[in-house]
Image 1 (cartoon, rainbow, N blue to C red):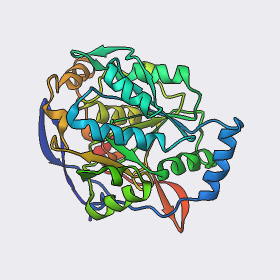
Image 2: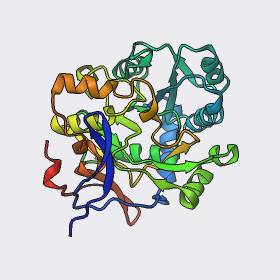
Image 3: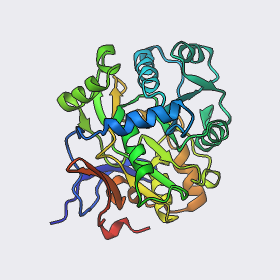
Length: 324
């Protein structure tokens, strides 16, 4: 029997609940992973440090200085830096206080290349800059409150190792986040503790919220509209449009743990900001009608998983309403 999980989506400019039918039920508890092949990662580390292979990922974000988010951002910097040498972390900012905290964490900073909607960073230009400056196998924007573990680097390493994926073609990897409230410094600085708290008090968020976008160098960011980060609608549009353009879209929720550090601002923070409908208004003006729900994870046909500790990329059947 087909399941119809209730999720939030945009209807015009209003967030409403509706049922998305799917033949693959969405999970409701955090996914804990114990399948990492440390031998593969150790070998890859040696090769990266000897410059015989590329780092896996350039991972970037941007945020404003905010005293209420100091711990969140500091934990993000520590966490992303811990992914070295597989990952090159980058923060875009023009604010001296943000630049200083990044310098203290040994994280690279770059100036904002383009802004819109009263100073909000435009996503595509940040991708352009990191792709021009850093030579890695993948490039990813992530919201600045997301913590990762070594499952991220293992998934990307397995993607490269896979014989089924053509890395020369555009690939978009997305996933579902796990919300954890009030992450402490001790919890956030250690991969094992991040996994532990995701299991003990984490809650998987809606499949219509995508917080990170991992792409190959051939992904056509130059063709993406000038959507801004931190405002709703752009995430579902990116997945929807990638599916429509026949790019290789992969849901890595089963193999990448992405922990959202939930604060008093809650889990729908972007819905309360000024210019909250900037992206929606821009996209509707350009494309008239957009099936946002077709950009949810329930509509992504390809997904990663571990079976008997073997990494796999599989294809699933999605509901006919997911058609683009």
